[in-house]
Length: 96
Image 1 (cartoon, rainbow, N blue to C red):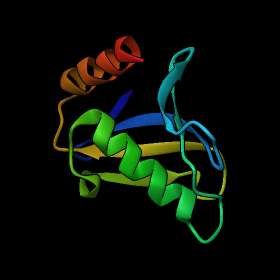
Image 2: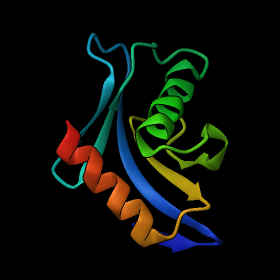
Image 3: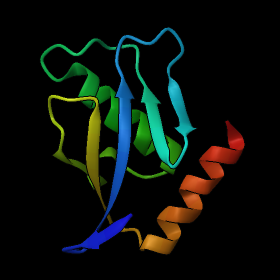
């Protein structure tokens, strides 16, 4: 995780068209599986919504800053200190 311009950056991997949507971990990276296909941004929107729900924040506090068309994405998380984001990510890993 990096901190830049008032946001903390988080790297995720998106799995579109998943039969089992949810947020899990693969090594150090969060994996966000969504049912939506990668068509017209549907998977990106689904990933942001699922990630926001898992982190307990509004989707409007998340923004894709890199990887709009790929599965690996860098997400800017605004309004959470890096320590708070780390704690929330850790709780996701334990819960799943």
